[in-house]
Image (cartoon, rainbow, N blue to C red; front, side, top):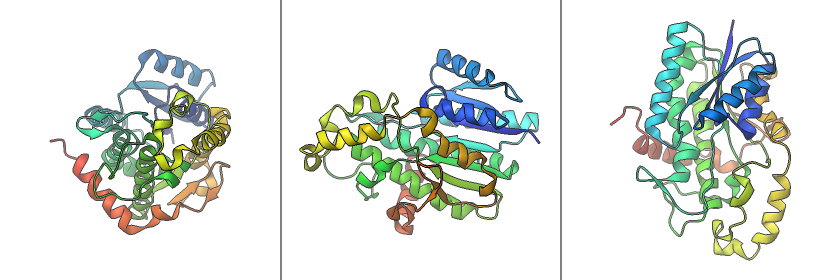
Length: 296
């Protein structure tokens, strides 16, 4: 049976390396991104691996929930018309912002790092279920440990600090991922989180230089913390992609779900807060409020 995969933010960095790894494993890979020129280059790279099936690119700005809906419709329609299953969805998209930004009235970090992958996943669940056994892989981050853990609203109380808000959005997505695994248990759709550890990417290059991205309590220590973080994010993207590739392809994970694949490409214990059902419920309410499955 033909194996197919969709990789968001798959035209560069960790996403591209994930797409290349999946192509080498025999998948027909669709990469998603904003830039058509980078998309064409990504397809050329995928096809250069001599895959069993040629790659393709779909254009979508994943910071726009409207474009996420259109992307889901396109992917679902393509698989329905071709009769081919969708066997893997890798939500690799992520972004950190030095200054607060709004996207359609919602804080940008929460949109890109959680609401966008949440909405795409939920809209594609019928397609993934029809293609079972299938897998969902959501890319997480060690920054969850620096997050405020209150989810009464999209925006936590206090000032905007990009590193912490990025971690909070990733924490929301990790809690959603583990909760989704429980929801889908027995359906044939397995759900994993993959922690890339770190790599030198467009997100880490430059953003971390701005001391405003951390709270005042951390700011005095930030030069030391930043150097430590940058050392951990200086490796090649090909290594950082291994957890996602393992989560998507490893036969040892067949039939398993709700597992976090750590930076060493092995299962690790989930961050405890993300396993709290109260956090999952609060995240679910926020997600349904700000990214309803039915377009309004």
